[in-house]
Length: 370
Image (tube, rainbow, N blue to C red; front, side, top):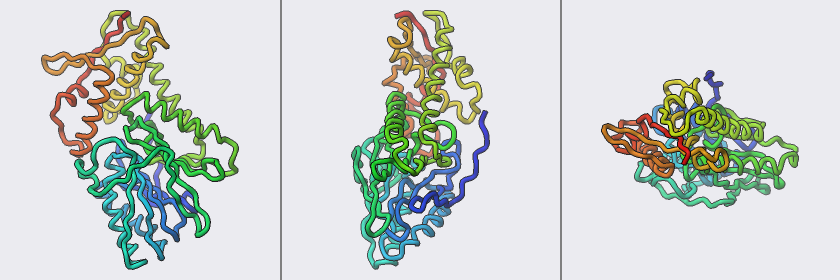
């Protein structure tokens, strides 16, 4: 059952050194809106993690961010902008944020020093999508970005590649004395519900990477690890939240497997029947997202049939007009990536392409003994 989401204030001081700014872009996929985080000592130059999207809420976001950044009165208020991934609800606000930070910097110091924007390689070109026209600095795995907490004390934001939601997705962790204290999970883990996935095997591996990070340092710090998602509320039970996400994905996979095992060998079935079995509670507005996740689960099962059921082999066929086409896992992943770029670039306007038509069609699946 889907419940209403708790309200998130426009500005929340989560710790003395982490402030959340709400993106004012609520929606089915952004929940209450995109969370961006200002990290560091307020009087010093800080780091911003993610921005928001263009639209009617952008100015409200900028107004609240301005109030926060103006706490720095002697320097450039931002030393860097870090992006968890390329999606517009995280990147479209970059230009406006840079303009704001430079305005405050000129007031403070008389000059506007360049502020680097970082993103992990992969995904589409932000310039071609008209999300952000400036330069991007490539992030690297385990790269550390310094964040001053005082004039003599600093911590580092470490980069953790976590593909799955998108090919370029990263999470960020801040550690103190070798133990993580703040974990910024982007869209890999949300504050409510589940996220959309482009590559399920990569995504499951990313969850395991985060779990290993948290589990390996459990109990080593007096501070509770704060999990900070890009959508939804924070959590002080990082391990529990990660396990919840792993269990949720596995439960959907298990339900899909249960349905498959109820079907006779060499029989065809329509995926709408599987949908009803695996996602009986999904609202109409999220049915396509659930269908995408269901197909991921079925391809996941097919790729691991030697581990699950020696007799289980799956193939998928999509019918578009008079054409019937087999769809492989690789083909599906490529179509998803292409469709995602086109949809996000056009802000959900209709898209005419064979790949999009196949994605939106209902598929027939066959369980066979070969």
